Structures are given as C-alpha cells and as structure tokens.
Image (tube, rainbow, N blue to C red; front, side, top):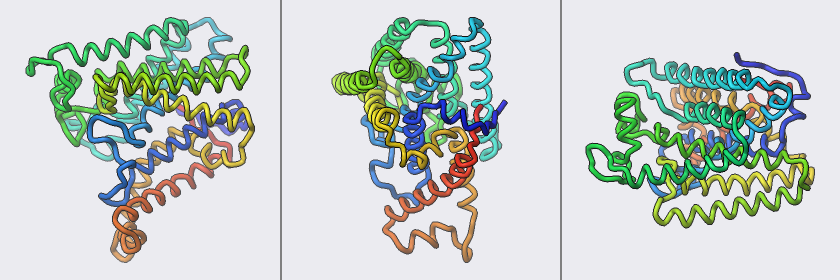
Amino acid sequence: MTEITTNSSVLKKRLLSLDVFRGITMASMILVNDPGGDHSYAPLEHSKWNGCTPTDLIFPFFLFMVGISIVYAMESRKEVTTDHNKLILHAFKRTVILLLITYVIRFFFQPNLAHMRIPGVLTRIAVVYLICSILYIKTSQKTRDWLFVIALVGYYIIMTFIPVPGVGYANLEPTTNLGAWLDRTVFTTNHLWADSRTWDPEGLLGTIPAVATGLFGIRLGTWIKRKDQEDSVKVTWMFVYGVIAVMLALIWDLFFPINKALWTSSFVLYTGGLATIGLALSYWLIDVRGHKKFTPIFVAFGANAITAYILADFIPHYMGKIRIGGKPIYNVLFAPYFSPVNASLASALFTVFCIWIVMWVLYKRKIIIKV
C-alpha cells in the first residue's frame, strides 16, 4: 500500500545529496516533457537516434538512483533479518504498486485496453527495481560486478551478432533491430509506443542493460555507505570511476553507438559515469562540506519523487484545459510575448513551478508519500 509519513526523522535519515540530485533530475524531466508549444531548444529534446543530449540523461539517472536507493533502503533491513523471502516480498509489493500506478494513469488518459502501451518509463523502473533488489539481497558485490559486465557484453553480442528474424542480419536500426522484433512479437504493434507502433524505446530486450544501470547505482551506493573510507577518498574515487566509465563509453561508441532508445552498453557506461561525477560533486558539496542552504528547493522534488512524477501527468493535462478569454493559457501568457522557442520554454518552466508549489507544501509539512 501507499504510505504517507509525517515523521521528520525519515527526512534526516536520507542521503541529502541524493535527494537533491533526484530533485534536479525530476525538475528536468518535467521541463523537457511539458513544453508549451512545438518548438524546443535542441538540448531539451531527445537525440533522434544515436548520440546523447542532456534530455537523454534524465531516465538513466533515475535508474542509477534506484540502485543507490536500494542500498540505503535495504541495508538496515538485511542487518536485522535473515529472512530474505520477506525482503523480496516487500520489493515485489512495491513493484506491483508501481505497475498499478502506471496502468491506472494510462487508462485514465486513454481508456482503450486494445491499444494501451505495455512498456514504458515507470514500467521499466519497476522491473529494474525488482530485479536489482533481488540481486542486492541474494548476491555479493563481487557477483553483482560480474553480472554488470556480463549484462553489458552479453547485450552487445546479442544486438550485433544475432540475425533478426525476417531481416536476416543483425542491425541497430529503429524498426529492424532484434529488440524491435521481440517487442512486436510479444506485445504486438497495438501495445507499443504510440509514436511508432513498430518499436518501443522501453522494450523487453533493453531491460538487460537497464538492469546494469541499476547495478551501477548499487555499486556506487555501496561505496558511499562504506565506513572504512574517508569522505575525501570516497569522492576522489567516485570522480575516477565516473571519468573511466565515460572514457570506456566513448571508445565503445565507435562500434556500439551511445543510444538511449536501444539502451546500448556504451549508453550505460556514459550515463552512469556522468551520474557518478554529478553525484560525487553533490555529495562533496552537501553531505561533506555542509552547503545546505539551497537544498530545500530541490529536496522538495527529490523526497517525494513518485508523487512529483504522477503530478507531472495530471497538472499539465488540466492546465491545458484552462481557458482565459476563450484561449489556452499558453496563447495568453507566453506566445504573445516570446519567440516560439522561448514561449515554449517559459511555459515549461511555469509548469515546473506549479508542480513545485505542491511539492513544497508536502516538504514543509514533512510529508513523504512512499509506495
């Protein structure tokens, strides 16, 4: 069940830098998902196929933080109980709730089961959370490191060497790669991404490297939680790990391109490396150096991320129905005063602010809604 907590001690136990990092990522997600018009600056759009824009970093950063959160949420539980089945059942219940939230929202906006999309962002988060939770509970860090490597190398081999049925050769094109074929076979075209119906950016096969992104986060969370290392040493090695991951990704990109839709192995290393560098900076400034005056602005989003995610679907939807003098808000407040691209950006920032107000009220009342 969904849990609403008002105890301030819950906030104190959280890793503040992680909440800030999550909050910035959540605000960025709302910003890029809810432009007011059809025009956007290039960094606020996804890459067309190969490559990586700042917008492409948002989803993998979330999965990376899922891995870190697993460590912080489950380490104490692992210490007080040897009943792993109980821990796994708890993770399974959370996964089911996340999936229910996903499909209830989809049915609300499009009550047509015959064409409802089955894969999706929150769906992938739920599945990755469950798999990574089980791996964290049942395996050692050394085993998880090996699984991380096997997932990345194995996915590369699968995608670049196994011939695609009906095509006859392995390829990385949008509609003819092995992942696209598998999604059409399992889900049928009626239940894939509405913008294509021939492939899905959150498809089945991409779950393998997506789990690797979660394992990347678990590795970092385990490192941050170590008590036998000084904070300066932790941060230094976080920067080193991040830079090495990015460098390896750029090398791998030469023959297995960085690609969000395919969630390629190079994409896992590239985004995981950048996330590690970003969190290292956040951890050093906030948790180690104590620069916390600015943090509440972002913690309001980060501490209640799932609530913000849901509101990011509903608030823009109902804002779009509001009319001023018979005109949409966008055509009254933004379009007449800005260029098309800046009007779209201003509208998106306004949406972020509206959702932030709700999150700020929850934060000030010390209310955390968890699943």
